[in-house]
Image 1 (spheres, rainbow, N blue to C red):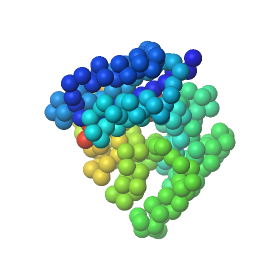
Image 2 (image 1 turned 30 degrees about the vertical axis):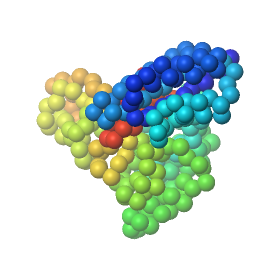
Image 3 (image 1 turned 45 degrees about the vertical axis):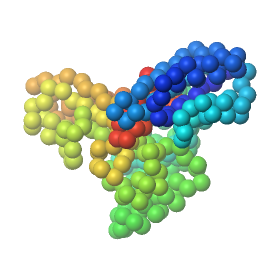
Image 4 (image 1 turned 180 degrees about the horizontal axis):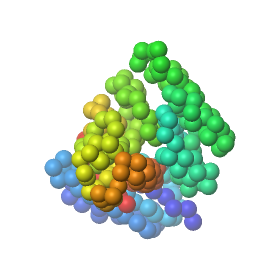
Length: 278
Protein backbone atom coordinates (compact mmCIF):
# COMPACT_ATOMS: atom_id res chain seq x y z
CA UNK A 1 0.00 0.00 0.00
CA UNK A 2 1.31 3.44 -0.89
CA UNK A 3 2.43 5.78 1.87
CA UNK A 4 0.75 9.19 1.91
CA UNK A 5 2.10 12.37 3.45
CA UNK A 6 0.54 15.39 5.15
CA UNK A 7 2.40 18.65 5.92
CA UNK A 8 0.81 21.16 8.30
CA UNK A 9 1.90 24.59 9.47
CA UNK A 10 -0.49 26.78 11.45
CA UNK A 11 -1.07 28.86 14.54
CA UNK A 12 -0.66 26.74 17.66
CA UNK A 13 -3.76 25.70 19.54
CA UNK A 14 -4.77 23.22 22.21
CA UNK A 15 -5.71 19.79 20.87
CA UNK A 16 -4.20 19.95 17.38
CA UNK A 17 -2.56 16.54 17.59
CA UNK A 18 -5.79 15.00 18.89
CA UNK A 19 -7.74 16.65 16.07
CA UNK A 20 -5.38 15.40 13.37
CA UNK A 21 -5.22 11.83 14.67
CA UNK A 22 -9.00 11.70 15.16
CA UNK A 23 -9.73 12.84 11.59
CA UNK A 24 -7.27 10.31 10.17
CA UNK A 25 -8.72 7.53 12.33
CA UNK A 26 -12.24 8.40 11.16
CA UNK A 27 -10.99 7.93 7.60
CA UNK A 28 -9.51 4.56 8.64
CA UNK A 29 -6.02 5.84 7.80
CA UNK A 30 -3.16 4.36 9.79
CA UNK A 31 -0.39 6.70 10.93
CA UNK A 32 3.04 5.11 10.54
CA UNK A 33 5.15 8.16 11.41
CA UNK A 34 4.27 11.51 12.93
CA UNK A 35 6.55 14.36 13.93
CA UNK A 36 5.32 17.62 15.39
CA UNK A 37 6.88 20.74 16.90
CA UNK A 38 5.64 23.95 18.47
CA UNK A 39 7.66 27.12 18.01
CA UNK A 40 6.56 28.80 21.22
CA UNK A 41 8.12 32.16 20.39
CA UNK A 42 6.20 32.37 17.11
CA UNK A 43 3.17 30.43 18.40
CA UNK A 44 3.38 28.14 15.34
CA UNK A 45 2.60 24.43 15.06
CA UNK A 46 4.36 22.18 12.55
CA UNK A 47 3.58 18.55 11.69
CA UNK A 48 4.68 15.92 9.19
CA UNK A 49 2.54 12.78 9.08
CA UNK A 50 3.04 9.61 7.05
CA UNK A 51 0.09 7.26 6.81
CA UNK A 52 -1.39 4.41 4.79
CA UNK A 53 -4.93 3.58 3.75
CA UNK A 54 -7.53 4.33 1.10
CA UNK A 55 -7.42 8.09 0.71
CA UNK A 56 -10.26 10.44 -0.18
CA UNK A 57 -8.01 13.48 -0.48
CA UNK A 58 -10.64 16.16 -0.99
CA UNK A 59 -12.76 15.02 1.95
CA UNK A 60 -9.75 14.61 4.23
CA UNK A 61 -8.44 18.07 3.32
CA UNK A 62 -11.81 19.70 4.05
CA UNK A 63 -12.22 18.03 7.44
CA UNK A 64 -8.70 18.92 8.52
CA UNK A 65 -9.03 22.55 7.42
CA UNK A 66 -12.40 22.82 9.16
CA UNK A 67 -10.72 21.89 12.43
CA UNK A 68 -7.36 23.63 12.10
CA UNK A 69 -6.86 27.33 12.96
CA UNK A 70 -7.63 29.88 10.26
CA UNK A 71 -5.06 30.31 7.49
CA UNK A 72 -3.50 26.93 8.18
CA UNK A 73 -1.09 25.71 5.51
CA UNK A 74 -1.99 22.14 4.60
CA UNK A 75 -0.44 19.99 1.89
CA UNK A 76 -1.48 16.41 1.20
CA UNK A 77 0.87 14.31 -0.91
CA UNK A 78 3.26 16.99 -2.22
CA UNK A 79 5.03 16.20 -5.46
CA UNK A 80 7.18 13.13 -4.79
CA UNK A 81 9.95 13.97 -7.25
CA UNK A 82 10.95 17.62 -7.30
CA UNK A 83 12.08 19.34 -10.50
CA UNK A 84 15.38 21.15 -10.05
CA UNK A 85 18.01 23.15 -11.91
CA UNK A 86 21.64 23.28 -10.84
CA UNK A 87 23.66 26.46 -11.31
CA UNK A 88 27.44 26.14 -11.54
CA UNK A 89 30.58 28.11 -12.32
CA UNK A 90 33.80 26.06 -12.53
CA UNK A 91 33.95 23.64 -9.60
CA UNK A 92 32.61 20.16 -10.28
CA UNK A 93 32.47 18.33 -6.95
CA UNK A 94 28.90 19.22 -5.85
CA UNK A 95 27.55 18.96 -9.40
CA UNK A 96 29.24 15.60 -9.91
CA UNK A 97 27.71 14.15 -6.75
CA UNK A 98 24.23 15.34 -7.73
CA UNK A 99 24.54 14.00 -11.30
CA UNK A 100 25.64 10.56 -10.07
CA UNK A 101 22.78 10.40 -7.57
CA UNK A 102 20.39 11.47 -10.31
CA UNK A 103 21.74 8.80 -12.66
CA UNK A 104 21.16 6.07 -10.06
CA UNK A 105 17.75 7.49 -9.00
CA UNK A 106 18.76 8.26 -5.42
CA UNK A 107 18.40 12.06 -5.57
CA UNK A 108 14.61 12.24 -4.93
CA UNK A 109 14.52 14.83 -7.71
CA UNK A 110 14.73 15.25 -11.45
CA UNK A 111 17.59 17.43 -12.67
CA UNK A 112 15.90 19.29 -15.51
CA UNK A 113 18.96 21.27 -16.52
CA UNK A 114 22.34 22.65 -15.50
CA UNK A 115 23.20 26.29 -16.16
CA UNK A 116 26.63 27.85 -15.87
CA UNK A 117 28.32 31.18 -16.42
CA UNK A 118 31.28 29.28 -17.91
CA UNK A 119 31.21 26.34 -20.34
CA UNK A 120 33.81 24.32 -18.41
CA UNK A 121 31.31 21.83 -16.97
CA UNK A 122 29.25 21.36 -20.13
CA UNK A 123 31.15 18.29 -21.45
CA UNK A 124 30.82 16.63 -18.04
CA UNK A 125 27.09 17.38 -17.84
CA UNK A 126 26.57 16.15 -21.41
CA UNK A 127 27.75 12.68 -20.36
CA UNK A 128 24.57 12.39 -18.28
CA UNK A 129 22.26 13.61 -21.07
CA UNK A 130 21.21 16.63 -19.04
CA UNK A 131 20.67 19.95 -20.90
CA UNK A 132 23.40 22.51 -20.17
CA UNK A 133 22.71 26.22 -20.63
CA UNK A 134 25.74 28.48 -20.98
CA UNK A 135 24.89 32.01 -19.84
CA UNK A 136 27.97 34.21 -19.76
CA UNK A 137 28.16 37.08 -17.29
CA UNK A 138 31.06 38.76 -19.05
CA UNK A 139 30.55 42.22 -20.56
CA UNK A 140 26.96 42.30 -19.31
CA UNK A 141 25.08 44.13 -16.64
CA UNK A 142 23.76 42.01 -13.78
CA UNK A 143 20.23 42.73 -14.99
CA UNK A 144 20.96 41.40 -18.48
CA UNK A 145 22.84 38.36 -17.18
CA UNK A 146 20.00 37.39 -14.85
CA UNK A 147 17.38 38.07 -17.54
CA UNK A 148 19.15 35.58 -19.83
CA UNK A 149 19.53 33.13 -16.95
CA UNK A 150 15.82 33.31 -16.16
CA UNK A 151 15.00 32.79 -19.84
CA UNK A 152 17.16 29.63 -19.81
CA UNK A 153 15.32 28.29 -16.77
CA UNK A 154 11.82 29.20 -17.89
CA UNK A 155 9.67 26.35 -19.08
CA UNK A 156 11.13 23.76 -16.72
CA UNK A 157 8.50 24.37 -14.00
CA UNK A 158 11.18 24.19 -11.32
CA UNK A 159 10.56 23.42 -7.68
CA UNK A 160 14.10 24.31 -6.57
CA UNK A 161 17.31 25.86 -7.86
CA UNK A 162 20.56 24.50 -6.42
CA UNK A 163 23.63 26.73 -6.35
CA UNK A 164 26.40 24.13 -6.62
CA UNK A 165 29.36 26.50 -6.19
CA UNK A 166 27.73 29.13 -8.39
CA UNK A 167 30.02 32.06 -7.78
CA UNK A 168 27.67 34.93 -8.60
CA UNK A 169 25.68 37.04 -6.16
CA UNK A 170 22.04 37.00 -7.17
CA UNK A 171 19.99 40.19 -7.16
CA UNK A 172 16.91 40.75 -4.96
CA UNK A 173 14.79 40.59 -8.14
CA UNK A 174 16.05 37.10 -8.99
CA UNK A 175 15.75 35.89 -5.39
CA UNK A 176 12.18 37.19 -5.14
CA UNK A 177 11.20 35.45 -8.37
CA UNK A 178 12.32 32.12 -6.89
CA UNK A 179 11.55 32.88 -3.24
CA UNK A 180 12.23 29.97 -0.87
CA UNK A 181 13.32 27.86 -3.84
CA UNK A 182 17.06 28.59 -4.01
CA UNK A 183 19.50 26.47 -1.98
CA UNK A 184 23.17 27.38 -1.66
CA UNK A 185 26.23 25.54 -0.35
CA UNK A 186 28.63 27.82 1.47
CA UNK A 187 32.27 27.03 2.09
CA UNK A 188 32.33 27.57 5.85
CA UNK A 189 30.49 27.05 9.08
CA UNK A 190 28.66 30.37 8.75
CA UNK A 191 29.22 33.12 9.61
CA UNK A 192 32.98 32.41 9.63
CA UNK A 193 35.18 33.12 6.59
CA UNK A 194 32.61 34.84 4.43
CA UNK A 195 33.96 35.90 1.04
CA UNK A 196 36.79 34.80 -1.22
CA UNK A 197 39.58 32.26 -0.53
CA UNK A 198 37.96 30.68 2.54
CA UNK A 199 40.48 27.86 2.83
CA UNK A 200 43.43 30.24 2.64
CA UNK A 201 41.75 32.26 5.38
CA UNK A 202 41.27 29.08 7.39
CA UNK A 203 44.91 28.03 6.92
CA UNK A 204 46.22 31.45 7.90
CA UNK A 205 43.99 31.49 10.97
CA UNK A 206 45.19 28.03 12.01
CA UNK A 207 41.69 26.63 12.43
CA UNK A 208 41.08 23.20 13.93
CA UNK A 209 37.70 22.69 12.28
CA UNK A 210 36.49 23.08 8.71
CA UNK A 211 32.79 23.38 8.01
CA UNK A 212 30.15 23.87 5.37
CA UNK A 213 26.63 25.30 5.45
CA UNK A 214 23.66 24.66 3.18
CA UNK A 215 21.00 27.34 3.38
CA UNK A 216 18.11 28.95 1.57
CA UNK A 217 19.06 32.09 -0.32
CA UNK A 218 17.66 35.45 0.76
CA UNK A 219 18.62 39.03 0.01
CA UNK A 220 21.02 38.99 2.97
CA UNK A 221 24.25 37.48 1.63
CA UNK A 222 24.88 34.03 3.15
CA UNK A 223 22.38 34.69 5.95
CA UNK A 224 19.33 32.77 4.75
CA UNK A 225 17.64 30.00 6.79
CA UNK A 226 20.16 27.24 7.51
CA UNK A 227 19.29 23.67 6.49
CA UNK A 228 22.45 21.69 7.33
CA UNK A 229 25.81 22.49 8.91
CA UNK A 230 28.70 20.11 9.51
CA UNK A 231 32.32 20.34 10.60
CA UNK A 232 35.37 18.09 10.31
CA UNK A 233 38.62 18.28 12.32
CA UNK A 234 41.89 19.45 10.79
CA UNK A 235 45.28 20.12 12.35
CA UNK A 236 48.65 21.80 11.79
CA UNK A 237 49.66 19.22 9.16
CA UNK A 238 46.95 20.46 6.76
CA UNK A 239 48.22 22.89 4.17
CA UNK A 240 45.92 24.99 2.02
CA UNK A 241 45.69 22.29 -0.68
CA UNK A 242 44.71 19.62 1.86
CA UNK A 243 42.13 21.95 3.34
CA UNK A 244 40.65 22.49 -0.12
CA UNK A 245 40.27 18.72 -0.60
CA UNK A 246 38.72 18.27 2.83
CA UNK A 247 36.51 21.30 2.30
CA UNK A 248 35.17 20.01 -1.00
CA UNK A 249 34.31 16.69 0.62
CA UNK A 250 32.29 18.28 3.39
CA UNK A 251 30.61 20.71 0.98
CA UNK A 252 29.45 17.76 -1.10
CA UNK A 253 28.19 15.90 1.96
CA UNK A 254 26.34 18.89 3.41
CA UNK A 255 24.65 19.84 0.13
CA UNK A 256 23.61 16.24 -0.50
CA UNK A 257 22.00 15.95 2.93
CA UNK A 258 20.27 19.32 2.56
CA UNK A 259 18.81 18.33 -0.79
CA UNK A 260 17.58 15.02 0.60
CA UNK A 261 15.82 16.74 3.52
CA UNK A 262 14.20 19.38 1.31
CA UNK A 263 13.20 17.00 -1.48
CA UNK A 264 11.61 14.63 1.06
CA UNK A 265 9.56 17.52 2.49
CA UNK A 266 11.25 17.38 5.88
CA UNK A 267 12.06 21.11 6.04
CA UNK A 268 9.65 23.83 7.15
CA UNK A 269 10.52 27.52 6.90
CA UNK A 270 9.59 29.88 9.70
CA UNK A 271 11.01 33.37 9.43
CA UNK A 272 14.77 33.04 9.09
CA UNK A 273 14.82 29.59 10.68
CA UNK A 274 14.05 26.06 9.62
CA UNK A 275 12.17 23.27 11.39
CA UNK A 276 13.58 19.94 10.21
CA UNK A 277 12.03 16.52 10.84
CA UNK A 278 14.82 14.05 10.08
